[in-house]
Amino acid sequence: MNLILDYASLAILLLVILILIYGLIAIYDIPFEIAKKRNHPQQEAIHVTGWISLFFMHALWPLLWIWAMYYDPKTQGESVRGLTLSEQQDLQRQLNDLKADVVTLQNTAGEA
Image (tube, rainbow, N blue to C red; front, side):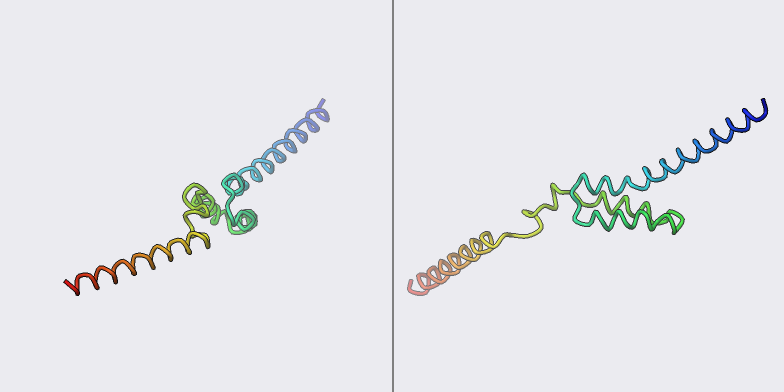
């Protein structure tokens, strides 16, 4: 009877250890999953830093969470980060037109 209880307790101990390891992996991948969902440009760096955080007593993990949450594709997409070449050229044309209008107005005001 004692032998059966010994094996049962060993099985329960191994099961608890496996569940803890799986939970640890699941928790440490949360910032990476957030970064992947948001299509973060540095998602691989976040993933690697999550594993490195295990060796630094979990000190980096809160920073990883912030790093992953900081990127928002709605506000940091291509249209917000910078202008395309055609948009830049269009703005340059508008600026040149405005400069020409100012010169025309100055010449007209100078003649009057």
